[in-house]
Image (cartoon, rainbow, N blue to C red):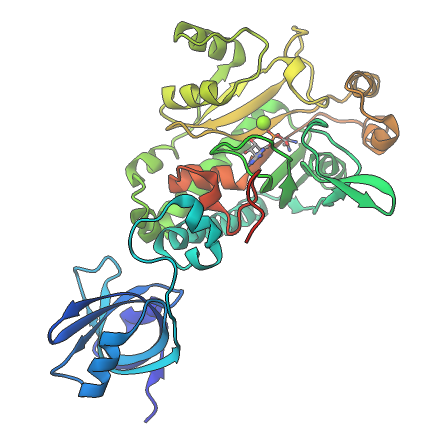
Length: 433
Ligand code: 4AD
Ligand code: MG
C-alpha cells in the first residue's frame, strides 16, 4: 500500500510507523557506515539517519552525496529521540531527490549579517529566522484575538494619505495623480474617527517613516497597531496597554516555547513581564534619573538612543514614561490640567535595553486649541478639517496608542536588531531583496 505523507510537526502521532516526508536537507554529517541528515519541511526540524546496513548501496551513496538545500522525499520509520530538541528522528529507508541544489551560498559556517540579509530570500529557511518569524505569526494572531475578545472593531486606515500627524520630516511622498500624498505614518487620525462611530477600534497595517539614521530599532516600513477608545481617559488606556502586552507575552510563552528556546530567550524573565501593573515614571523623574547618571540632558529634550537604552536597562519590567514635554510631541496630545509644558502622553518602554514599544496619549478634545496647534506646527488646515470635525460634532474624551509590531517582536524574541523581526526588512540601506 501507499506510504502515508506526513509533516514533521505531526511526527509524534506516527512513532513506530513508516511514513514519507517532503524535506530540504539543511546539513549532513557522518562517515563510514552512517549518515545523519538534518532535515526541515517548513513545519519543523528532524534528523534522518541513513545506515549502510539497513539500505541498499545506491541509497546510501545517494545520501552521502546530497548537497545542502536539496529537496527530497524521505521514507522511513519515526522514532522518539529524547536527545533532539524536536523530539523525533527518522530511520530512513528510501530517498527520492526532487530538486538538486548546487553551491548553496549560506554554508554552515558563520556569515556576516549583511551577507545574510543580501540572501534574505534563502536565509528565511534557517533556524533563527524560522523561530523569530513563527513568534511574529503567533503575536499577529494574538493581537487580533485580544482586541476581538475585548470588544474592539477593526477599522482599516488608508495607506495613502495627505496627513502627516507625526511630523513632516520623515515622509515618503507619493505622486497621487499630480497631487502630493504620503505613505501613512500612523492610522491614528482615522482611528479617532472610527472611535466616534464604533467606540473602541484598532487598525493593523504597514506604516512608513523615512528614517535617515540606521539603528537597531528603526525600519522605514514597519507594522503598527493603532488602538483608539472613546469615553476613555489616559489612566484607563494605560491599563488596556499593559493588559495587552502581558496577554501577548503569555501567548508566546504558551505557544512558542520551542522557538523561544531556539533563540536562547530567557523564558522566566519573559514570564515576569506578565505581572501587572507596570510602573509609571514621569518624564521629569526620568530626566533626573538620567542626569544623576551622568547624562547631559536638559529638561524638554526628547530621549535619544543612549538615553532610551539606559532607562530600559534601569527598570526590570516594562514601564511607562508619562507626561512628555509638549514641545517634542504631536499636535493632538491632550493638555495637562495644571501644567502648560507637558501633555497627557505615555511611552511604554521594554526592559533589557529594548526601549520604546508603544507611543500613546489622551487626545485633546477642543476644536480651537487643536486648530491653533495645527497652525503652530505649520500643518495645512484644509487637510485636517475632517479631523477637526470630530471636535465639532459631539466631542468626547478619548485616548489611544500605537504599538510597533517589530519593536514588540524584538523584545519578546530577544533579538539584537529589528531587521530580524520582519521577513524582508526595509531600512536606510536596504530595499533588496
Ligand atoms: O510613537 P509613535 O510615533 O506614535 C504614533 O505614531 C501614534 N500616532 C500612535 C498612536 O497613538 N496611535 O509610533 C508608535 C510606535 C512606536 O512606539 C514604535 O513601537 C513604533 O511605532 N515605531 C517604529 N518601529 C519601527 N521602526 C520605526 N521607524 C518606528 N517608528 C515608530
Ligand atoms: Mg514614539
